[in-house]
Amino acid sequence: MKTIYKNIQSSILKGKKLLAVLIDPDKFSVKNTKRFIEKVNQSIATYVFVGGSTVDDDATDRLVLEIKKHTALPVVLFPGDVTQITEHADALLFLSLISGRNPTYLIGKHVEAVSKLKNTNLEIIPTGYILIESGKITAVENVTETKPISRNDIENIVDTSIAGQLLGMKLIYLEAGSGAKAPLTNTLISQVKKELQIPLIVGGGIRNKNQLENAFNSGADLVVIGTAFEDDESFFDNLK
Image 1 (tube, helix red, strand yellow):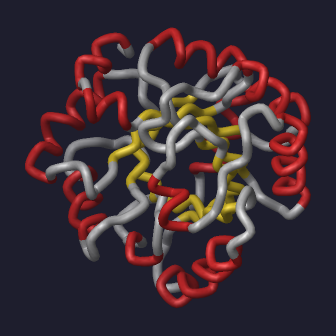
Image 2 (cartoon, rainbow, N blue to C red):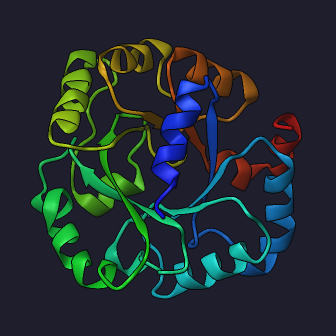
Image 3 (cartoon, rainbow, N blue to C red):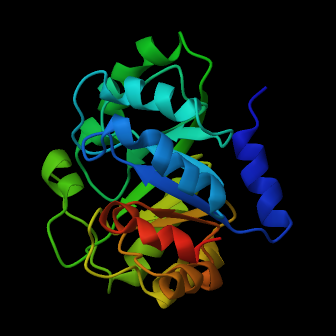
């Protein structure tokens, strides 16, 4: 039974905020998995996301298998490419880069993925992915050859989010990008959340507990943190 999306919805109804720890197979050594996941298990994290913009073939598969040995938390794929699909995860965010206009990342990669996905039991969750300017050129921007939306263009971001919802997306993911200089503003998050009827994910640039709480208080239903843990695992100590 596919339960992850239902669990996200039920958590929102209960007022429970969700946190995903994002692990990039390109920046993470599999030999460190046990120690790292032990810290994840002791934190308030509710999901483990796995993925990155550029990842070697089979690296995701190996990492997911190792993660599953050490946690009961759902493992959700956050793939930058078709090569990052593995049947060993629990779910996959079927990301459409709706902030960009490159057809490859709007629908092309999705068609390419079908032959792999139909042979798995992954829970596939259609997700509208919106890249927002973060003060630096991100890997997503380079790989997809798309430009992020200015963080000051709130009306465009809100309208893009609503368009994703109307297209049938089940989640909207506002992304400042890996290593963003600053997280998304409270105003931006709250304005998007006010107009949405589907869960809102926020990621990028969150490096301390105060920024995490600001994202939640502004309306994020699920926050994704990756770089902060890569740079300083002691961040986990503040999330228990």
